[in-house]
Length: 577
Image (cartoon, rainbow, N blue to C red; front, side):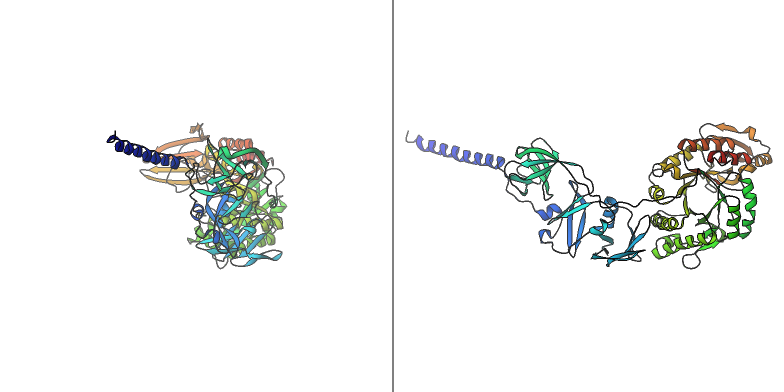
């Protein structure tokens, strides 16, 4: 027995030690971690609570921390331009070359200079207690307080982060029933963000089985055990409604527009007005192609304008919308025109807009028609700002502003029909050039799906009463010889003559139910000839589709190309016959 006693004692000690070790593991497994989270790391900032003047703040947008951050400079909160555009208002325009920040409303443009306190508009200079905007690290930063002048949002600053609200609704709130911790993740081993005291209220972000994601009164987002949540309640959030967008007024024709473009290639072309009016019976707007962008420094536009023409057109009962384009001068003179350089410079762009309006007023024009067809995607944002600025001047002077657009092939385009629909009076879709001159692919100028698809995409953003569809009073004769494809534009009035020259007639063409056009082809001299014909049948289908969408009018490219029957169809649609 005496010999066995040491063995027994040893075994007992082993059991005790093992039990202690096992118990320690159990305690470690089921005990709550006291590890504190690194808040600088959690929020992705470097100076944390030490922030007193310059630095960055994480942003909690609604109930989620987003990747973007706010900047703090001299104690003032700033957002970079991209954040302002994406979350508040995309109307701000930055000119980095001239170091200006612009915001154009329905009646004015507010301009702030980088690094300056204050901004100016047509009423004069308005001082602010903070620098409105500044540039740093290839970004432009806008003071939060200045941005709030043009957007409804609220923000509250904390040590390392900013709470930002752009939407308001009903918040679900819980009361903390017993002192506990807010943790980075759900689980007792997750690091602690901060202590929660009994009676404190938290907002429910996401409820789960044992833990829930909540936001505290100081906008810290983390997880707390469900057993600590009591007294479910809801709270109606009060929205910020300080900013009210100015109303954009528009000038509308009485009834539908029936516009005919008058192609004028020189001052002598003005003498053809009487003949054009006689042909285009029923039009109520004539648009002479007088002005073409020429230079960025000297004389901006080549002009064939005539005040006498305007006076005569008014005598015929017509409104006159002068056309300004960005391509005819280039084509006529085989020279490059730097439209991007003009549009991206605030001084040149605003000077161009003022030049247009001054010219229109001197001539007695009723409207301005912008036909900039050679814009790159890079130039588009500057063009959109140009339309905003030009619309302010046109509105003040009672001028109708219309803009010509190519048919949008998808909804993801840079044409920004939402902006156009807001600021201009009429958006004209040039419902043609599905296959254009020199495109090396034979096909229809304007099939019905091409036209209706484009209209429907525009109508997603533009009120129907502001939309005009332009009809092609021309077709193309395509010639394919081997791999070479050439084409010739044929006015509608000359189609029969063209076919007759090849020994063909309109009766030989067959109606294509899909394209809604008469189609004819033939072989000759090792050449395939093809024509998708625009005639009264195809035009009637387009006009019926326009009527079904109740759009604001019809335009025609161009005067001099039509037949009596074609013009009568357009007039019947517009109610001007």
